[in-house]
Length: 237
Ligand SMILES: N[C@@H](CCC(=O)N[C@@H](CS)C(=O)NCC(=O)O)C(=O)O
Ligand SMILES: [Fe+2]
Image 1 (tube, rainbow, N blue to C red):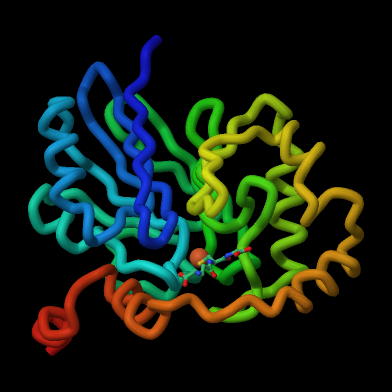
Image 2: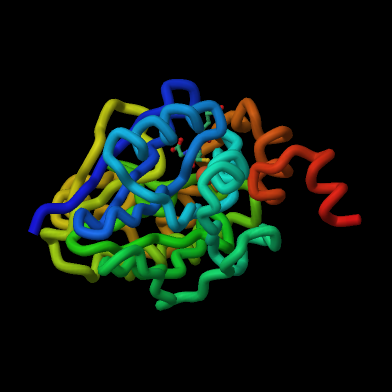
């Protein structure tokens, strides 16, 4: 049966956002939205005649502000994130194995801590939305936000145990890649190929990457589910 599936790209942060929908009922999900593109998502939903039911996050992003607050306000869709993310504002706090429904479709959360403790990978049909746990030819960094290279190694190992044909749709790509597969990453991902847990931890601890440009704005905003500070204060009062 046909599916509705779109991949959208944010040039500023190299974030990949995904739209999934049940073609029969028109119920849709968005994964990892970007605040600056709320208008674009709304237009797309309208064009495809879809109603948004869930806004999912793979984790609290350090490099861009989520579009969840704006999308939730306009569409009434509910927000969901991994329970260890710390975004208590999310309507649903997901645990490993939790399943969300949209129309007749099901999407399952797999807890994949490491890049952050609350990172979640979503599994829908033949594809994984890995956030920053597993990138194409790479993986998320573990040097801030409670990152843990050993935990990331174990999480990636869980994903690599899935069938080789499983498609990988990451949360970012910095090299113009858009989709991979478990089989492909096992063969060619230099960060994980031929590594032991210890050598992976050593490699991750030596990356010395610059801090994300927007982290000081993005992290607190994402822990408020993308709401502006003023609005959050009113709700919290
Ligand atoms: N230059 C980017 C930094 C991007 C970055 O650090 N991305 C994180 C994901 S939030 C990462 O894990 N990157 C992995 C890598 O660069 O290998 C920015 O300023 O936003
Ligand atoms: Fe990230």
